[in-house]
Length: 304
Image 1 (cartoon, rainbow, N blue to C red):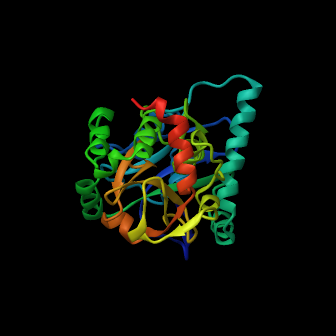
Image 2: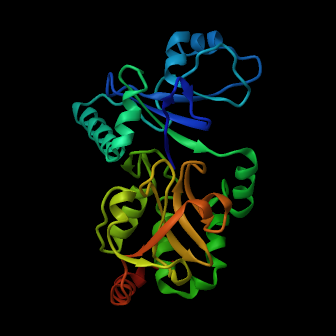
């Protein structure tokens, strides 16, 4: 779930943000996330990462010197999820991923305007929205985050809908990505996935080819009312833009599976949580009854 960061009227929009920076110069350059600790200063952090105070200020839209414990900063460095890349082929892959990311953002005219207002020479800042502490707490209560896959999968096994062969098949597919991290714009299970590349890959294994982005996936399938949701339906949310920008797969009992930035990967969340209830914009059914029967007949041997 992502939010564009921009400056309006000289003041930063009032959001707490977890920022992931794409450095366009050079393409292979990466950025790390640093959590401010008590006693830190811009000078100490800059020295630790062999950069300048001005660079950190520019990356994070900071004007003053004051930092607060727990504050998230982007610092120059190698991505914690990425391995060193030396080949030309790998550099080309990164360029393609950057183009794919910028394409999703540029679909919104307003997004282009806000990016041009950043004045952050060769930096596109894409950010994860972090709501207020009370809202996060509300979500945490209703969403089993940061748990082992064994415990995570138990919450699927306990669903009344688990008697559905389709859900069993989906659960076996979900398991393939239990150790894959969330990385915005990525579509490589060995390095990272985001919400829409996850749903795209899951449905590909069911024999259905979905568009790459959440916005594109919202344009396929048959609209479904929330009260008529079935296992396998796609559920959509508005997060960082007015268009659909987050997607998950409904598994029954008001819950859905998705790739979550706040959970750093695979997660089960409730449609009734405060965060998702306010941002839910609709659902689409891409699995007809006939297709479900075909999928179950073809893949039932893969159930574990």
